[in-house]
Image (cartoon, rainbow, N blue to C red; front, side, top):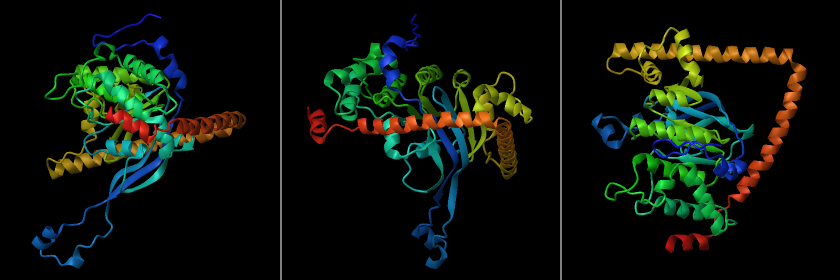
Length: 390
């Protein structure tokens, strides 16, 4: 098979090199069912109480809470790149934190499933990776040294030194970092990698465990448009290797819009659109909001679903529009459920066959996920100290 290398050195076709990684990757779909998340509002501080001349019993916490996410339901399928869009405060990062069991406060209702199995933190840690928005790397290490350092601490203790090096080389090749493998990561004071290359190293750290699920919090933030597009193309290539990739994105350019498979648009913690990216423009056009010519659909619809606080009148108008869009999406989902129920009644015999096949798939997942959890045991304390001190 012919290999194609883009201008930035990203390898687009690595079938022969990637066979070991693809073989070990388990197909896992992520299904979220009626997920809601709320956090308690902070009570007034003592100095504000004194300044307002309030008595202590007048400022007791009345149990008020802020609703961050409201009734979120969707499915992220294996082999697809899913982008979660929305303005600031729409709930993108909170949703990713809940999916990856990173919330330490607040109240969460609803459920998250991995191939119809309830998600637990231990199983998630064995099959999922999470890439933060900020890169936390050691500037004085090279790309290869960084990945080797992390691999020796994260990969199972059954891995030999030779196998660890092989895994690191595969990840470097997969992310198109071969030419920069011996370049220092760098920072503001140490010359090193570019911003896009540093972001790929952060992604590579998570790829070391061969995650079936990869979650990224705004991986294109702080990057120029060309580099951001390159990162998304890399993620699309990774998704094609049987991975489920979910990323939040704040301001995608049009090329990114055409690259992702599925798109979700959040507003005030609720879904206003969820489906194939290519259907988003037609969906909003059917509601009377076509995208203006020569304008990025992502920019237009993020602005459309944002709350305008510049004046009371504009705020009231934008809130009314958002409410209308929320009701339209809910009505569409209800219609889909009715159609599905009617289809099930007509094709009852076929559904029984499907249920049997699904049951078999679930049993296979029950066998695979615990085995990956068992295999992901980290090296012992002696090995960790040796890696850290040498």
